[in-house]
Image (cartoon, rainbow, N blue to C red; front, side, top):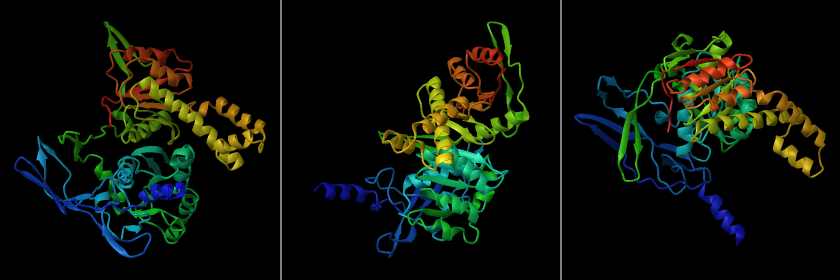
Length: 435
């Protein structure tokens, strides 16, 4: 009986829900009309192999019907803002040919993760980059000298969270990268193209969704394009807003960290180095795809620790720090012993491995402060108190990025100037909340 019950539970994750949403959706904004077409694919059933025409497998959970719609007609202009026009589909334009391998038939979360991956990668197009996402947040993101280097750096930044994630890369997937990717469990791999031999390597994992998004090569043009962002309420109401635009494009767009409090001026005493500016840009770009409240740490073009979705800023700074230590220890353990830290820890408990080796990893992690020393701390909103800044300073960060505008910005500036060595800080002048 128990086995049958568990079998039924597992079966629900492979269910393909019926779809009663219409083939066309029309939305009117006053006298302007947007027309959307439902996206479906003829994909072989993962059990029978027969072609079935279906859109999304299900929504956020197996009991929820869901559909994907592509904007096919309309030219929305509101308050002088020209919204994105038809013909620019990315995820909503994926065809059967692009769905190189459908795996367990894509669901809503697979494609929203892919969408947010593109939202991050669009700012990282100047060199090879990789972003791995889960639950619509990046597990990690990294630049690399090559694509395989970018993926390796992103994966090793958080191997734990990357399990079952969605990988988005901004260069054609080559065989070396495909080989490294195939050693890990992912749900989705998306690239602008796949070089000869790469698909065969990836397809060995039959449940992996392999997706070509050719317009990844054009992502730069999406940086300044707004779309209508909808939020549905439990009462059936809808909130609509313009999508955000990141105004920080170069280091010159950052603002000096200075403020006036009770007629006294406060200013940051050490200006950023070129390396710090590079990480500030990288970190603020990655921040565009993270759920608020968030604080992240980045170093040398890779994320070190990511804290997301918390109610208080000092708390999320502490969580990001904790995660940095945890992921750093896991990375060290995997590199030295070929197993995850938690597996090694369990083996020590069972007497299968030497406890001294585990303590060595712990001590190295503490010495290196989870890789946080010399990193840049990035916050999607201002620090209401200096306690959040102090969390990062304690771990040896060298720089901070935040919007500024707090009544107590002067406290954060004082904290940076008092640090030994001094910590630099810049303001963005814009918030990056994402709910």
